[in-house]
Structure formats: C-alpha cells, structure tokens
Image (cartoon, rainbow, N blue to C red; front, side, top):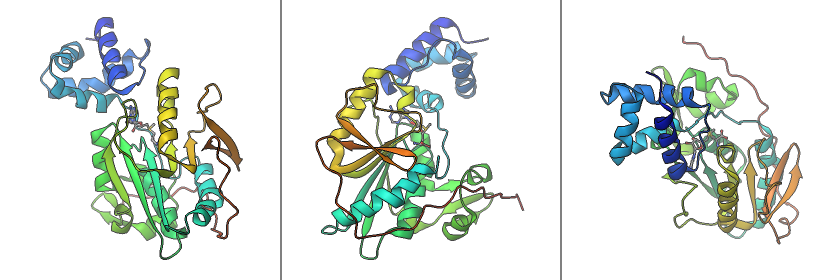
Length: 294
Ligand SMILES: C[S@@+](CC[C@H](N)C(=O)[O-])C[C@H]1O[C@@H](n2cnc3c(N)ncnc32)[C@H](O)[C@@H]1O
C-alpha cells in the first residue's frame, strides 16, 4: 500500500525536526522507496505501520533518518574545489601556519567519505615534510560514518572520479572492494555531528568543506548553520559550498573570493592570508578509472 499523506507528513516533520532536511509533498514515492526495506525488516505490514513504529519507538529513528538522507558523492567532486585547494588555499595556509605546521580541515556532511579521502590524497601529495594535517569527517548518518571508518568502496564508487594513478597508489583490493591505505585513514577523524543542532566543542578549522548539504535545508536553517560555521572557521580560513549553493541570498558575515571556477567564502573582517612562499602542483584532472570485475 502506498504511504498515506498523514504518514508522509509525520515522517517529513520528524526528519525536519531532527535533521533540518525538507521533504516537500511530491516526494512520497521517494520516502516510500527508502522506508520499504526497513518496514519489511521490522516485520511491518506496510510503510504506514513502520512510520507509526518509528514515531512510537525512538530506537528506530536513526535507521529511518539514515535511509532518508541523500548520500550522493564522488571522488574529487566537481574538481574545481580541489584545484582551488592545491592552487590557492594550501599555499596561503602553508605560509600562514609556518609556526604550527599543522592544518585542520572539516568535511562536514561527508557522506561515505570520498570528500575527506580526496583531500587526504592531496595532502599526502602536497604537504611538505614536517607538517601534519587532520581531517574531521562528520555526518548525521551513522551508516555513512561506518563506511568512512572502514574506508572500503565498491567498483561503481571507485569508477566515479578517481584517477587511476591514485587508485594504484592508495588502495588495496579486498575481495570485490577497494580499501584505502592506512596512512590516509589515520589522517581522517570520524565523528557523528548534526549540522542542525548546536555544535559540540570543535577546534578552529583552516578549511571547511560544507558541500551539497545546505540545498536540503530551508533558509533559516542555512543561515543558522552558516553563522555557527563562522565561529569554527579560522579568521584567515576558508569555507567551500557546493556548486549550486551560495550565501548571496543571506546576510551571513561571509565574504566571497573567486579562485578559478569556485567561490571561496572567508569570515568577513579579515584580510586574506599573505602571499605564499610555497607552491603546490595542480589537482588531478577529472578522469574515470574504469575497473572491471576481473
Ligand atoms: C549529498 S551528500 C554530500 C556529500 C559530500 N559533502 C559531497 O559534496 O559529495 C549530503 C550529506 O549530508 C548529510 N546530512 C544531511 N542532513 C544532515 C545534518 N543535519 N547534519 C549532518 N549531515 C547531514 C547526509 O547524511 C549526506 O551524507
């Protein structure tokens, strides 16, 4: 039986309250398709019965939220942000952080980890010796965070944007999957974090990747998240949004600065970091690694 309009409204309200994600009317088919396997696994007759179970029993909430998050991602997604990382942000930060020789990066809403590990691969290539870096990877989906922790990817995922040279350099085949190297996994700290709730204690980040997640929120939530991001981004740090996301329609205390094809967001009231004494090579060009099952 298709999901009823009242079950849809209730689960949409719960998702909005817990994650800020909007499920507008018209998305019933999507909610139903995502919740049906969970309904079956829980022994419910249909999705409506499962929705009432979730509303009655908070133990089922995380599974439902995991199922309703959109986890689309890929290696070096859109390429331009990663090009800006090596061409602009990294040189400026290497100059500005010469006293600490440490960089802190946040992949907020990291999905299955391709964003965090793409950055780790670039750092492995471009960080001068004697420097360290930590990438904090956070998401609301515990299922996705488990995937980041294991660092294993199937062939379809590997074929999405990962240059062959980086596959050979950083991955080992384990059965039908590919596992990321330990040195890159050690660079990535995995934490559960809900962007829609007050942040826990966080360090000051030099770069924040907050990409392809604000699109799911309403204007007030976006504004609130961007203002809290301001508090955890270093005064000379950078915030990157997705290619269709912008701060233009919001009063948010971020200044925009072009770097190639991307807009970097910088906490307002602070001048960009000084001229670089470091040079780093270009980010890998987008390229498909066509894997076969052989
Ligand atoms: C489309 S993916 C984007 C992944 C990656 N940033 C990229 O650009 O490829 C969106 C991610 O946001 C996460 N998400 C949704 N609502 C969230 C929230 N309130 N707090 C933290 N993460 C959230 C989802 O679980 C999902 O993994």
